[in-house]
Length: 253
Image (cartoon, rainbow, N blue to C red; front, side):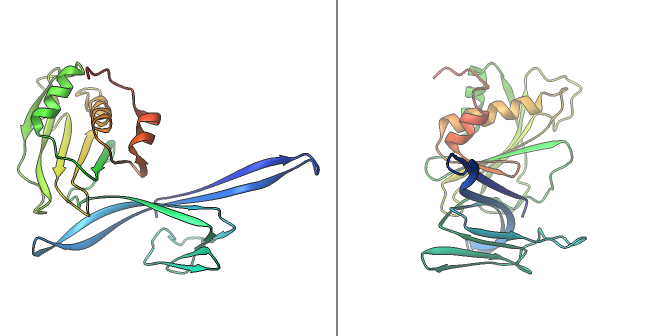
């Protein structure tokens, strides 16, 4: 479990001159890897799920000092009296009773290379549509005033869903910049019922402009397709991303 948020709504009761709780929502973000049998083979898939539990009437969070309670083996769920109950293993450190719940999840092929310090990552998953070609990205970046060159890479993973990968390097990048400057792009095909996905990685370096380019690319993708975004540990619907993080580039529609 990477994140746990509790949101309580309160109303002021004029009769008692006190605030009363009007509703509680608890959100848990869970990152896990699971082998999936596809294309006659067994391949690792990384998933990040956001479980939102609304109308929470009872919950408990218990953590023993010195214990890592973020590790979850199993989540149990049941319906009792029109309410949902969740227990989070291994020892029930988190227990929730709520009226309703919804889950949003982003999947991608398991990344062999871990995220380095100072590196940002953004993933977009589209439930329907066709994966754009590299030329599509180059054209949109030209319109946004950030022309780039493309350097193709050999596939870093044997996962059959991976379609292509490489680096988008700003044309303004210094000639002395490393060959891995810019934004690393991985594009994958159908996975977990979604038609395509795109993962962007970049260092927050001012020298090669990778951080700025990643934000502009994310904005272009989110404005062009319907889907779910994963920024760090935040799982957001397309509209949420545009509302909170969008409007960073001016594009000719």
